[in-house]
Image (cartoon, rainbow, N blue to C red; front, side):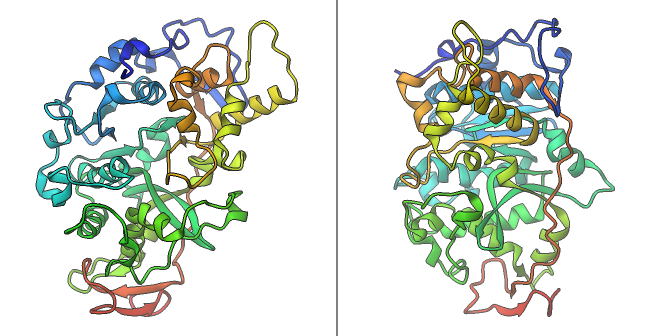
Length: 432
């Protein structure tokens, strides 16, 4: 049976103004209740399932292929808490592909933005949901602006303070924000779980054109690493030692195909288009606010050796209540949660690539027996939920200093393969 709004476990009383008993950890401050959306979970859940007009660029975009009612309760709580945390200045849009749904993607984006397999519902393979989300995120940002956040993400910091103030500031060079992670030794690759920009962004437009072209005449992502637009790029190969990463139980060809939208970003950041003068290396270095994903979205994974079982165990530790013993495990859980709340912007939990790791926290929380474990009263998981709504961070977020990457630059049209048209130069020479 699909979870409904009434299945959502109760959260701490956010309407109370008595904060005298709330201990605030170092690096954090308490958010005044008047800055929060104080509606109940049920009211917000109902609101999320209605369509809302786009009145500004302050939009949060998220997607769940089968709709809100089919989300696991922990994912529902993620979105509810975004609404509560961001308050009235931001509008959260949760879209789907449910026939007849008023939050269907088709109400926001014309079919011309999508490949045939998307429009005809003939996408197949193990990653239809994630890749459907990949196809819609860039058109939404291009048309309406805002921030795309993957639904499996906790939000620990207000979007204004993550990047939006910088994007809005006319004195700032930044027009986009992303998180990046070292996917090859010494090479930071932008990931697509968090993307922020105002509408009409030229990088977003070209990024989507490349990704859409990969899907021409196909129904899944198999072999995308060999596509003419991407085949000049090496396969992804994350440095396990630097990322505290166990051996990925997945072939790198499949891993690269799964993250093909990130590969499209890489093509564009290394491309100069002679036809219109678009300079990807220059835009990447000067106009994108890039933060380290290991710090800002994968802290939990790195801190636990990417073990979903270990993450589950720490968060399931009882924090308060009868019989609680503040032993080594208790202190490890407290340090884990306090550090995350104070020093990371989001916590992204994913289900894949399927089989890549021995366990995923998302899979554990998805299971029926654990549907309330992300918010069970008295646990560190519930405290993490509480802190994500009620605490503000005091640190400043620092971007990666990219400089001018000393890499090959491709002189070609956005949709022109290297071996047919492209002239390649060193990043420090021609074109830079």
